[in-house]
Structure formats: structure tokens, C-alpha cells
Length: 309
Image 1 (cartoon, rainbow, N blue to C red):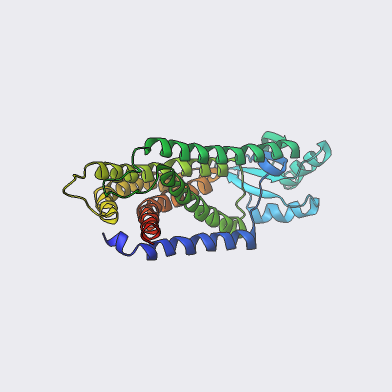
Image 2: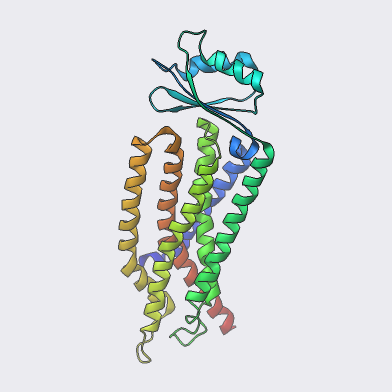
């Protein structure tokens, strides 16, 4: 009952973190990658020693190609992200990266993505997030359709409100990692690419599973009430949390350990992906325990006060 007793404090913490994430997004913005705005991606591997990024950046400034991002890959390679290049500019880029023929790199791949493809990817990414959110609301509303008439003798919380609260929790779980990514984008040059979208969709799936587990425990405890032993709705939610939070924390902790291993020991290209998923798992577990369930109690209390007036 500790969580339900201090529910307004925990909900307040979530509101503050979400506001800070929105503020960082408005102030710094996102560094959009070539997957969405179009551009060229060149992967090279040096024969002997890989030059430092500082040396390469100083040489690349002479090209006047605008913003160029160097991303280390493997032991000797770089992934070079730039605006769309023609054949002559592509040749000039490779020549500069060769450092005056002292250490000629081998070009492993060169891909060009046009702005129209980037716009199509953006549209599909937004559509995927919207459709998944609607599917979650419909699924929870259907799964909890018999919970509206609770054993407390009151109307209880309607099944569609369980789905709506789950979406609120999901927005919380996605917004805060996005705020973290904005800071990484501003200070370390992280780019919003297709892996970012995959991370967001994965967070949506992983976070809602914890919330549904706790909601399902609430549903079972409501069903198991007898006519002579009716408990208050907040007590049922508190009891359900006590029965579920250890499982949720342990499950999330094991996943976070794997993601941290990927972050520290995995390839450079997946580091930000692993970090976003780690933040999503952490705040997803937090929201399931400290946000979604307390919000249920607040909704039920609001309905009760409205009914008594």
C-alpha cells in the first residue's frame, strides 16, 4: 500500500521527467539521420591503423560538403554519413579519407538515400507507432471487458480506461528515453535513424507487457472477492502490486543486464540503440508499478467523488 498511499508523489515524478524531456526536445531538437532526410552512407576499412576522428574531420572540412558524421565500426573502419553525393564528390571524399595516399582505405559499401525515400520512411514510422497504440487500447479493452462491474458494488473503472491508462504509461515510457536521446544527439552527435524507430517500437511492446501483468492481477483479485469480503478498490490495487512488483522488477533487471552488455561490449552502431532500450525498460517498469496502477486508483476515486455529488 506504500505506492498507493504516496501515489501523487510518484505520478508527480513522472510528470516532471516527461516535461523535462519535452523541454529538451524543444530546445535541442533531434539530429535527423540520412535514413529520414536523405544522404549518402559510405563504409570504409583502413589497411593498417585507423586514423583518429579529429584528423579526418580536419581534412573533411576542406570539401565543404556540410555536416559529415564519422562513426567507427570494427577495428579499422568508419561509416561516413553525409549529404547526397555525385560521382565527383564521392571520389573527392575517398581521396580525402585516404590521407594523401599514406593509408588507403577500402570502400566496403556506398549507399545513397533520396529525400523521397526518407519522407516515406518517416510516414511509415509514424503510422506504425499510431497503429500499435490503437491495437494496444483495443486489446486491453477486449481483455478487460468484464472488469467494469467490480466486486466493490460500484461502477468501477471501465475496460477502455485500462487501455487508455496503458497508453499514458507507454507515452511516458517512450518520451523519457527520447529526451535522453535528444541529449545524446546534442552532445555526442547521435542520429535519429531506423534503429531509433525499432527501439521505440520495442519499448512499446516490452513496457505494455509489464502493465498488462499488473492489470491482470488486479482483475483476478477483483473477481476473487466474495459478497461478504469486499475490499476497497485502492486496497485491491495495492495488494495486486505487492503480488506482482518483484516479478516485474526481476524480469526487467535481467533484460537490462543483457542490454548493458550490448552497450559496453557490442558494436558502436548499436550503442545508442542499447542505451535507449535500457532506459525504456527501466522507465517501463517504473510506470507499470508507480504510474499506471496509481492512475487507476485516481480515476476510480474521481468517479466515486463524482457519483457521490
